[in-house]
Amino acid sequence: MTEIRELVKSLADKYGRERESLIPILQGIVLKENYLSEEAMTEVARELDLSAAQVYGTASFYSFLDTEPRGKYVIRVCKTITCDMHGKKQIVRTIEDLLKIKVGETSKNKKFTLLETNCLGWCHEGPVMLINDQPYSALTVEKVHSILVDYIKNR
Ligand code: FES
Image (tube, rainbow, N blue to C red; front, side):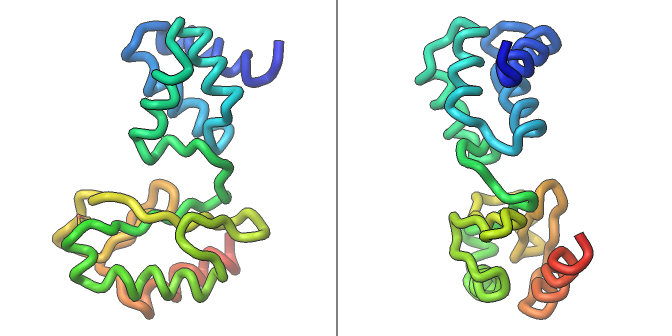
C-alpha cells in the first residue's frame, strides 16, 4: 500500500466514510503533507466512494485546503474590504519585497508561500495576516518587517 493510501485509510478509519467525513479527512492530509496532491484526492474519492470532482470541488472551495505544494510557512493576508482600506496593499508589498516573491508564489528555499485570503474575522484590528495558524493583527510596515525578520532568522 502506498504511503498516501495508508494515510487516507487511517484518516477514514478515524473520521468515518460519510460525506461529512470529507473535510476532516482533507484537513488531516494537509496537516501531514502540507497540501493536497491529486493522488491524495483520488485516494479520498476512492475511499469515500465519491467522485474526484466532488473531492476537488470541496478542496478548492475551502482555500485553506491547499491543492499545491506550499512553503513551510504559509502567509495569508486578508484582502477583504476593511483590511484593504487599512493598508493591506502596503503590507503585501512589504512582504513581497522582503521575501522576493509575489502573491501566489513560494520562496526558492520552500520556506514561505504568500497568499491572499478572505476575511479572517479580525476586521476590527486590520490589516491582518495569518502565518500558518498564528494571526497577526494591526499590522504596519514596521511590524510586518520585524515579524518576518524573526521568521527568516530564527525559525
Ligand atoms: S476584513 Fe480583514 S479580517 Fe475582516
